[in-house]
View 1 (cartoon, rainbow, N blue to C red):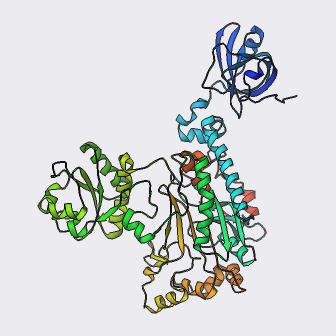
View 2 (view 1 turned 180 degrees about the vertical axis):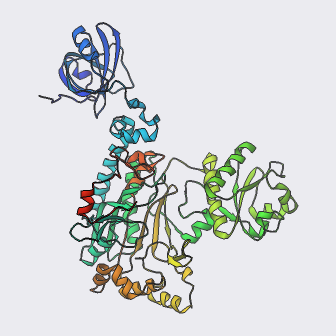
Length: 588
């Protein structure tokens, strides 16, 4: 059967009038007008074309086919009498001489209307993802993804990077998330792990003498889903540079990303080089977040000295943070909802008062502020018409809650948010260590393979107690765009002696390091270059570019929130024979 087409369904124009053509695609809709007149919409990957059926025999044939069947139309192009200016092919139509059924749709009813699939329940969309993807609105995200990946690849090659693929089956290592394990049939009782990231391999490439590496790398982590995180697998623009430091990495991405965001994004403005550099502690104190949305011009102020002894119980003995908003026009109902939303997201209450146009303190906790009005007005720099949002708790809690409040206020107040742009920044100088929430002991905060600020000297001082380990910062950095963390990176710890000293502080000795990271430790002992890298998430990047609310909208075949592929039925059970071959017994 010959299925070749002369044109696609988005191609025909007035200059094609009179030509004989062959189109193929999906029968999107048929509108019957009379016994010998119908309008058929034919859709393919590229667009749609109207087909006007004026032959009773052809119409009788088409009426027997269900919508979404694939068909071929052979006919002549003519000018439409009633043009549709909203369609690229709206000036013409095709009058068929014959039609062929290429692939029958067996069902009279579809799970959802193709062109309105985004309105359907997400579980249904994921189960019938192949139908969901027929919707041009859904498909365009996947097309854009392909174009962006191609642009990223070309940009990296132009920067002198070499694309190298790294193994998918590797060894399990402690990198911050749960591994996906793969049983090794030839080695009973042993397992491969799918890589959480190509971290060790790309560093080994640097020790092997490769200067600039990148790949669009698949990464696998057994972690829970979020709106900006897909469970199971994701892709990142993984890169590493030898004989390079932090500023070298920054310079590359500051050249690569802005043109791509400006070209492919919902907004055509993106930060130019250099992106703003914000130390972690400053970001927390000024924005209440290590991924601040710089489109919002609001900043946090410390109001502890002003308000901690004002008599309001939640403030007493706590850090108090304030967000001052000029020109605020929200109603009491809107303020109550905003505070409720903050509490839901942050788990802590937000408080407020207003300094009205008559220079009075009103609303919220006004009765506690009124007695010290002059002190508060001067301390916070208030002007008539200001709204003041407040949070309290220990320092970090007050900061984080105020960060959520800042974001909510920015979204509510268009005069404080320049929304239609991509605002990049670097968060730098992350703490090297933190106290683990579950363990209560010292743990790596960001990345165990990072170079500490101060090198070996600072680590030895921490070991002897001269320096508090929690004050040590590292050459670690995050790339943030519009409040979304796109990537983490670091200048790597390439010195075996420094590596051992760094791990000592988290109760891992030299033998532990050698056992957990044998290849990397041994490679560093043969002379490793200073190197640094980063890995922006491709899925998050596309989510930002398309303005999608969830990351699942930009992944061709995403899992659901429970890490299930409901279309393929994964994860699923396997046979006893398969388990026996792998020396595995299921106990649950």
